Amino acid sequence: MPQDHANSLPHSVVLVGFESLRTFEFGCAVEIFGLERPELGVDWYQFKVCGIESRTVQAIGGVSVTFEHGPEILEQADTIILPGWRNVDEQPPEVLVNALKRAHERGARICSICTGAFVLAAAGLLNGRSATTHWHHSNLLSQRYPSLRVSSSSLYIEDGNMVTSAGSAAGLDMMLYIVRQDHGYRIANMVAQRLVIPAYRDGDQLQIVSQQAMATSQTKIAEVMDWVRERLSESHTVDSLARQMDMTPRTFQRTFKNVVGLPVIEWLTRARVDRAKELLATTSSTVSHIAYHCGFASESTFRHQFRKLVSQTPTEFRRQFVGNLPQMRDKNTEY
Image (cartoon, rainbow, N blue to C red; front, side, top):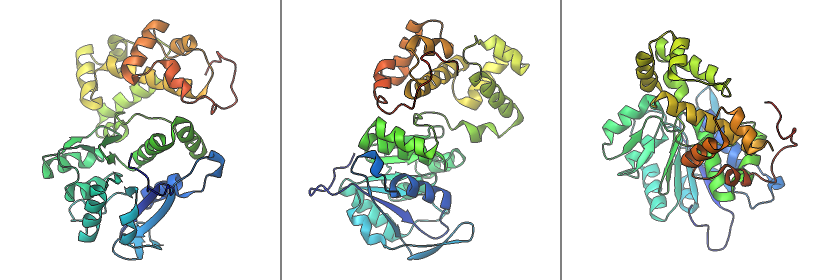
């Protein structure tokens, strides 16, 4: 995390705007960082927006946006947020590229949502780094900037003081990650509760939704994945899921890995651990009950897999949310 100003001013977040602005991504950043949140009891962000090319721009959807500030305020930003760039084939304005370079040189954290990664790459700020963007544009980003290590599957990636995220909604996950880095799990969880969104999704969670819609077989895989998520407490094998798909086990395994990017059993374990994280963060159920509910053969197996994937024990993970859990059901309530 970049250092705050020497005079201990609140951490400054500046959101960048430009012509043909994508209002969803822009609005998500305003919602996360721009609202006053006195109920959190922390020194919240100093938030500003700036127009790069003009103080008034036309956003997508026939919306006009007027900015109080120009690009000069980027010089004082601790964190800069770039929404999706309007055209991946258009070079970003020199004034923006130069401002980002100067911000990087003084140690500011710079974050992009979706195709905003193309702006960072054009500025040379992602050279030799790992980055992500919307899966639809990942091959182009990789081809155009071969020094980048581009992931087409991650929701968000932090490499040094650069944080890139995938398609529009993944920007919310990235920004909650930033809040966790700055203020801890408890505060990030409170913000997520107010937004009515998941409190925690790992950056390496796959960009599954968009990829699954590309072909009939992939759509069927998505349906089976949803079916399994609703039945995690049950026993599942490659053979049983292949029958669900009306495929041979070998064909099912090959198709699944092509779509998801993971072997079937590895994905199943991750799905179980993801569900366990949600229950650990939002309920007071015992670890043994959560292990059973999520389909692990034993509590010891659950603890082993959880630590392997999360690098924490279930108890250590839960401790981050203590004091912020909602009014609980009974310890071993069925979900």
